[in-house]
Image 1 (cartoon, helix red, strand yellow):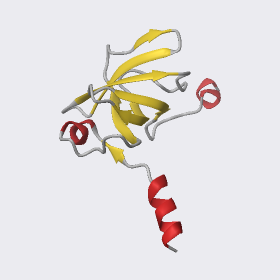
Image 2 (spheres, rainbow, N blue to C red; image 1 turned 90 degrees about the vertical axis):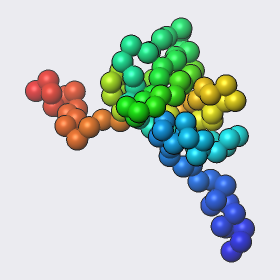
Image 3 (spheres, rainbow, N blue to C red; image 1 turned 45 degrees about the vertical axis):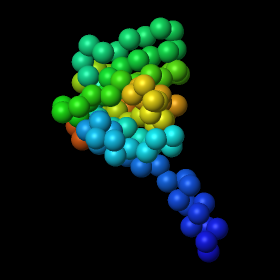
Length: 112
């Protein structure tokens, strides 16, 4: 039973807002999820390397990611990034998920 609980705890990935990260509530050296809005005017692309800022309207956290972003990723929209916070305060994401609001309509339905 202890082995199962240990494996479960090591696979947990917690979610933190920029305010919680700024307050140093997020773990150092461990993977966690950062959630908030992509701040307008902050997305910079260099091939598959992307940098942007995530905000919860109170605090901001810079993020770098290398890979293909989801279709719904846009400035001003919700995002969840999974990765680690560097000692320099930059969140290095290895996965980025775009969030949509409850009014989301699939492109096929919107076109119809």
